[in-house]
Length: 198
Image 1 (tube, rainbow, N blue to C red):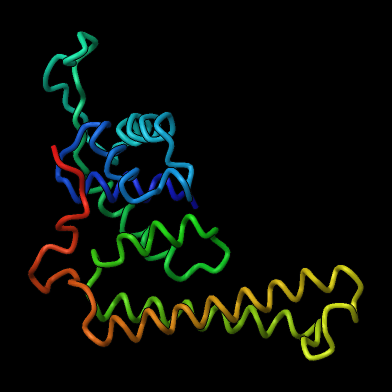
Image 2: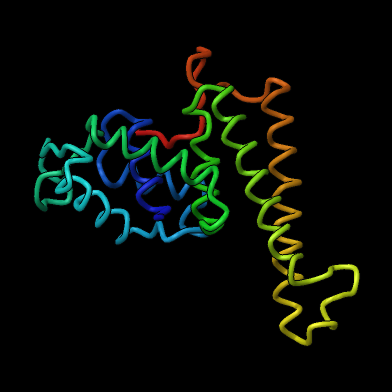
């Protein structure tokens, strides 16, 4: 699963129509260039590739202010919207995806209705708990990692990762159930103040 696809589709969707620089500026304002592969080259490549795949529609709108080729704006297609929501839902429940994918999904979590977001996060907790159970079939955390030599450190890492991931997810669920944030269908503008100007 690719964080860049989710990030770019989500950023274009939020704007409705955006050129590459806007998408890049929005993602950089979230720090995505620090925790994902959302670097300028990969953003522009993803925009062009997803336009070729029919997930985005491209429009040449005006000559570049720098005198180069026309500036291209992108908007998400119906196929792109379906792919976006599929990626978003999958990223929220998958414990195999990297932290960049989860971070991207949490950034767009509010695009879902609140009850669905909670249900997906509960599935994530269940998957993390199952992962922990599968690890402790081969490793007894109370005996410590040394009991299996240095490879025990790997299993200890997995147990701690599963436990901390489940704890964090439960906290997020509690905040959402407590009314935090504005979700799809609730009115309001969940991304107000989170997108760059222009």
